[in-house]
Image (cartoon, rainbow, N blue to C red; front, side, top):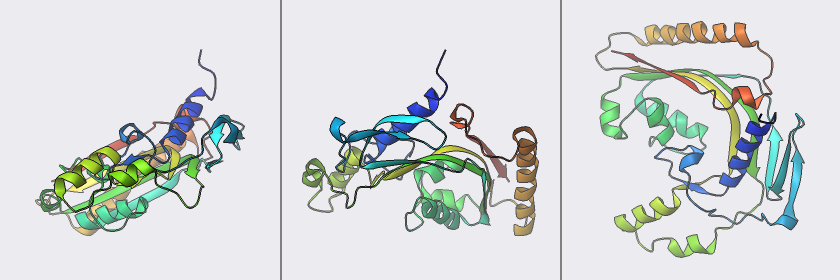
Length: 246
């Protein structure tokens, strides 16, 4: 039988191993798809590692001194956005990821089942909305400052804006570096309104509110509103409903 806390330990360990690695923000941003080795220097030798005890008593062994692990509240944080235009929601997702602009992220395209073609997806959308909760349990982050890019990456940077060279670099190293990861769960409803829909902004807003009230009030009755500390129950508790209004 699996030890209590083992699932949490595996997830935290995988998250620590992902710190400093690259990912392509325009594609799937799950840890499974981050790039191979670290792009920035992290002192992870045996002599510079230590065991960290989390606030809930879980011990994480062999944590590099350049990495900090901390416990989060474990309380569901409401998240509501929209209804708004395609580019506004794309910008909202970017802001959450601490990125500028409104170029659609892979997580945004995945949430609303978009094709990845910004022009086509925007034309096929009247408005977007979301309602739900996120439950942060732990956070791991690089604390080393300043971060130093490893020599391999420095030598691989293209010397010109030649498309094939840039594409090859992104394929190998990604567009961004992972510097922190929040671990927990989320339960979100995504709403997409097609251009053919005649519902007004107020009607869509009420629709989003009613869906959220129906789902999350029911959940609170079953789970309570206090903090959740068991990673066995929360990790991967991602429930996404996509409602399409046409």
